[in-house]
Length: 111
Image 1 (cartoon, rainbow, N blue to C red):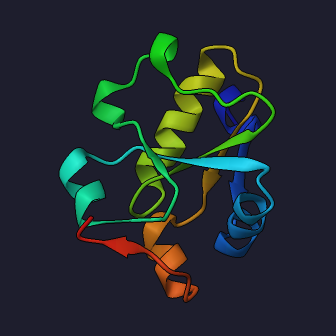
Image 2 (image 1 turned 180 degrees about the vertical axis):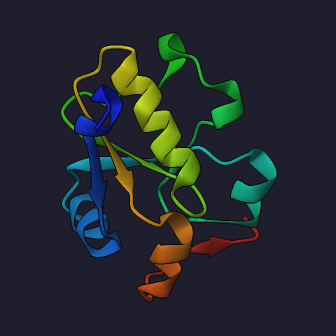
Image 3 (image 1 turned 90 degrees about the vertical axis):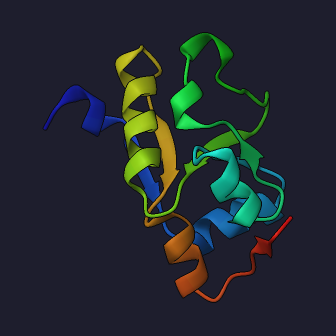
């Protein structure tokens, strides 16, 4: 197991929703602008993976940052980049927006 895998925390959609509803976390969506505009999780913040830079990565003091994408691949990749850059751990939504939808959780479309 690589170092970047050790600090990777994968949360199920229900766990993420509970953290968001409690105000303990912020969801950062790493998909592209057009994907986000088509459908996203309410309250999520867009920060495309294609624009990723450690120096500009969003932070929300006092709240956990949970990374999301469509299927969990890009969010896990960004999480690994953060861990490799020295952040001890990173959280991502396992299965991304697809898993969120499959769990019957609401999304915002066409916004």
